[in-house]
Image (cartoon, rainbow, N blue to C red):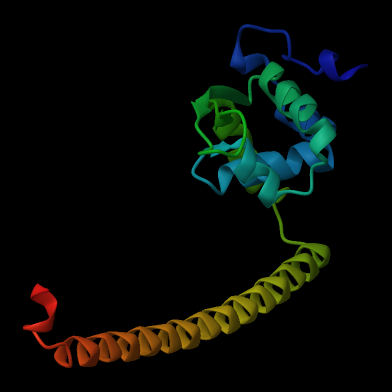
Length: 173
């Protein structure tokens, strides 16, 4: 049986979809994508899904298109990425996809594993390091800004002193 032969995958009726068998066919990456979508209230951009999963860039579209073929997700449009390339696709859980996520939760298929916890701890450590780096940069910028403002203030004072020493009678020559 190929991916395209999953029960109900070529059917027009959502009720023909066998969630138990489909869960077996889902695989790690599609499972991660479905979970990520469910945690974004059922709607997310490609960029968001890539950030929240470890799905390889080269197979991302394949996995999303397979989920769409199984009627679990649908491309709901595109959004501009503000100078970061072409518009990002927006993906949305279909009603069938929402039911499937509910099925996964009800059967305990959506669970947190030790690997998930380890990955989250690693991600948290990276984010904390990034926060520390950004706070250090912010402090340096504040210090530099304060120094520049002080230097500008001194220059303004110097210019005002020079203006005060100019004799108005000398300027009419």
